[in-house]
Length: 153
Image 1: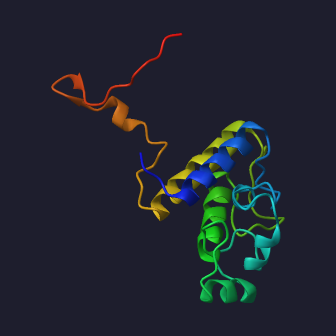
Image 2: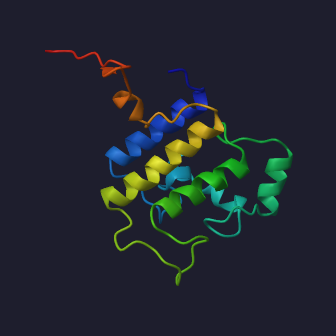
């Protein structure tokens, strides 16, 4: 499957963050966008509220100038983060009295968030969701349409 450079880099960063326990929806350097942006928190200035789609003044300036951060526009970054937080069980924008998951760093919660983000990243680049495994079960006249090659050691 052919992917864009920005998608490939984002997937690698998110995959590594998930498997090394460095994915945390409550930490702006370790959330989905924080990991995509190399664990920097400067992206948080693109909006006045974490989990909002509304760009701040700074975000609007960057958006209007056509700036991207690791390939993503400010508006795309806010969209990624909102999808991640909501798929993890948070009510956005984040606020101390809004709903949040009991254990925001559990593997199940993070996997749900990660899956939603991967879907959005693929949509941005007009690529089929790389996590969609439904094609593996497609059949034509009782025969699998797609085949998986296995390697025996």
